[in-house]
Image 1 (cartoon, one colour):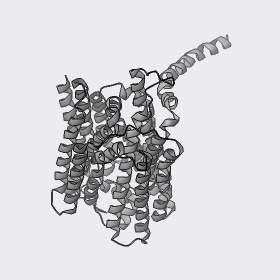
Image 2: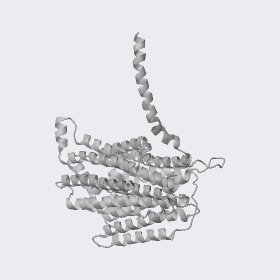
Image 3: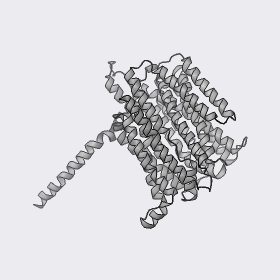
Length: 504
């Protein structure tokens, strides 16, 4: 009788385990099963891009301790540093049309790695004061610009390779079903985002330990492992380049004109230079997108446009800015190690969410996904509001957990949102991009998404000017956080509901 009871009690548990495994098996194992050796070159680029966070904590603390830049100035600088991402179409035209030393992919990967390495050496030299041809602030700007441009070049190459690594025929030369190709293309995008998250997760905790244990100069030099990693896949695996074509002078010329205008305005002292560059860039990129999508069916164009507009609005919400980080250092006592723990927690949760939820996200309309993410984002800003109002002191006294626990929950919950938001659009582009314009398509969409981040940085700058925060001066921070939450709810919600109504 006891044996029968034991067996009977164990059966529901076994059934529950089997049910859970049946639900989790596909999202857990699908990315592993989908991996192919041919994917390695592009995945090492994404892995390195995520691993660049190894210098992030050192960068944050060095800027606060050694430079004179204010949060508003850093937000303004972030606008200029984001602009190279909006000119990806120039690089994409080179990658698609102009091989260097017979290579469409490997040579550009090496160029990007070289630029990133130069930027890291400049940061190390400024931190160690053995590069002194300009002020540390100017060297910092130049170094960040080189790192950004190198990252842009490498990401253009990776974007161009992502459709190329998926074979269109079987080993015997017979064509593969279109549905099978589309599924593989979507999975490559999933693998790319997962690999980025793995890179960020791998260095999350290490970044804090290194910044705490070594001089910032040394940490920046350690970061040179990242560009070396990015080229390893390209050197180990033979790359199959796409079909070479002639330059599209309208796309290339528009990109050059855009980059030149942005550079001239950046060097000028004109007050609204950033706003003009943003509006001109947005107009040019929208015109280019309209041109390259001309061959698509109207229904496909409408789906891509709706997804792009909705994701743009979601990514354009402002951030809290460096003032909030400095508040966490000065008032909450967060040191380098704990910032590393935060990064590890955030990237770990982001990686898990990407791994388990991406398949569900790809299968649903972009507007539905973004409505859910907007609601979550608004709710998840609340821990930041609690911290700046000192609620952590009450929770520590009454409930037994304080600022660090709240910050961990906040970081863990917010981390997957931005990663998940872009997946539906990238999957659409991977499926519908013409074979001879893949890099250009991905570059234009990435440029549009980068402009959304420029909009976010501009709004962040305005809020930091309206509610000024600086080292040791945090009185305006609660108003700043409340304003960010309000905009983060209203802006994407209005746009998403608007485009959803138009789609119907």
